[in-house]
Amino acid sequence: MTVATPPVAGRGRRRWSRRDVLLAGAGVMGVAGLAGSGTAAYAVGVEPFDLTVTKYRLSPPGWPAGRKLTIAVVADLHAGGPNMGVAQIRSVVDQTNALGADVIAVLGDYFATHRFITEPVPHPVWAAELARLAAPLGVFAILGNHDWWHDVDGVRAALAAERIRLLENDAVLIGSGRERVWIAGIADQIAIRLGPRRYRGMDDLPGTLAKVTTPDPVVLLVHEPDIFPKVPDRVALTLAGHTHGGQIRIPLLWEHFVPSIYGARYAYGHIVETNRHMIVSGGLGTSWVPARLGVPPEVVLVELSS
Image (cartoon, rainbow, N blue to C red; front, side):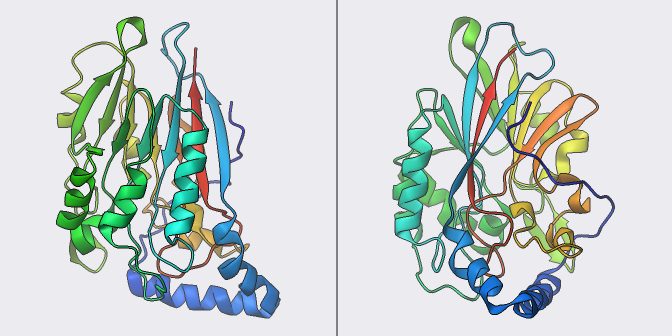
């Protein structure tokens, strides 16, 4: 059962290019302007700061009887003002820690790359804030497409300097005794840009799952949700980010802002296909334009039990 309600899913839309999204962003703000200047002001100056906690309670197939696990998810930080300055990052970390989760998953895209940055947040600064995240079974991170496209070495170095465990096609067994769980994380699926809407991924899902050597349940961390059709039943839960839930949700237009080859199918929320479970976070920061409308920034808390 989920506490949040995902949007209606769609299918088969193409991935948008940067130019597409920028042009569409201008169009959306124009539509918002037609709806009233207050709507545009809200999308830029209010909703991006309206941090929420979205809670899900799941019982995945095969989850061991009596075993409980809580996971807090921090996705798509995109550090940098106007909407994700140091004070806002600090608030995200404080609210995440206050949830008291067993595990914290950080799902990539650590710094802002849009053209409207008003407060640069250097890698050592956002990394030092994320280093305050604390959970008894560990904090685990993966990389996102923006990290790869703009400064993957710098992001890796910042995480390493703060001893934040980065999973790139790797898996680690956490817990003890009958409470053990695998946390697996894959590298980015569109890491290398080859041309317009052409990418090469660095992900290795089979190689990652080959490192799972016991029958304990697996939680898989991915940045883009598009890999979900390839995820086997062996994985109890997939956690994803990247889409921002569309970021700007205006009726008839919002699903065009979902950066996925599947359109709105994996845009947001709790998705179940052939008895496999995935949760896609709406994320925290903004991409391409510093605005959110109908998709407030969120920290996700997942409670797994039988």
